[in-house]
Amino acid sequence: MKADNSQGVCSISAESNGRRQDWLVCPYRALDDTLVATMTRRLFSVADDEPVAIIPVPTLTGERVKGTLGDGSGTRVFCYFQEKLGGEIGLSRTPASPELSFDITLVELLLSDDGTRLCLGRYGVIELQTTDTHGSYRHAVSALRGALDLHPDDFPAQVAANQEWSGRKVEGPNISNVFKRTFYQVAFKFQVTKRETSVGCVLAIPQPVWDSWQPFLGRPDLHRQADGTWRLLDDQNTDPADWIYVFDIAENPVADGGPAPIEIKLVIGTDAATLSRAALDVAPAKAIENSSGRDVVLASLHGRLRKILPGLLIESAVDPFHLL
Image 1 (cartoon, rainbow, N blue to C red):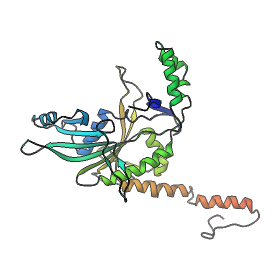
Image 2: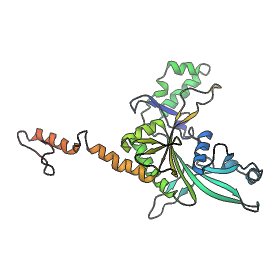
Image 3: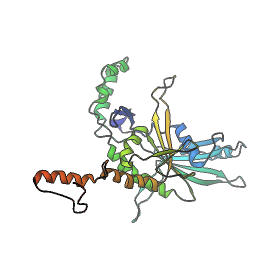
Image 4: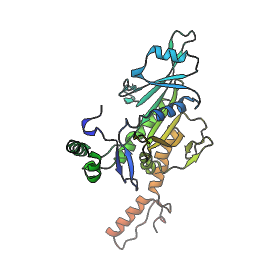
């Protein structure tokens, strides 16, 4: 159950990336069966034509699993844990490591050789990161609830005519916080799932969030692979265990009036080392140097001091010709 002040809030429309985009703020909206199935197939190397059953833990029964595994169809069976579906799987805090939880933890279920017992195969992790925003949704939610009470018969028309209701005191995405909070966790989880018992980790993020990450990653080059996926920087790994799925909500709703589908925009194979290199090597280098290769901090110091100490020649002791 979502918090009362955010019930009904799915996305926030903002121009934080220079153009208007719908920033997904509800993680449950991204818990899409098709998206989860696509990422599961990627992690566990399941072909598109191979049958799968992906079962949330609350609906899991031994009879169902044994029946599916033993019916001769060759169906591979996976179950998953999520905050509202069986509870998150996580890592306990130790004196030398932090406490962390996985958004979705998948594990393959297998039958023993004699067909009498269920066995656990390898597990995989999916992180679904939406958007943090500044401020609160409380005022907008309150305004819309009041409008629904007053105008139950023509609520959509009233909202269209009074768009201020849905944006009342709503603030934009907290871009820096999203990256800082997500980057460490993702790099950490990419690393902890690099073991024989795991198939790896997927980070799934909306297109606006990926766009907002570009300055923090040094706007890294993307290289398309033969299979249609992409790699960052000079990474040419042909069999990565870690992936970034960039998705967006389709602009047009489905014909039956249901929710607009989720569309996958980019599938990027990567790892913690490549992602860290982009964030900690490429981006800082681009931040400190301007187009001519000069240190922008040194240039700024030079410009400020020249105003404070007019008439004096100020140069860099490190590079005497740097600012002449």
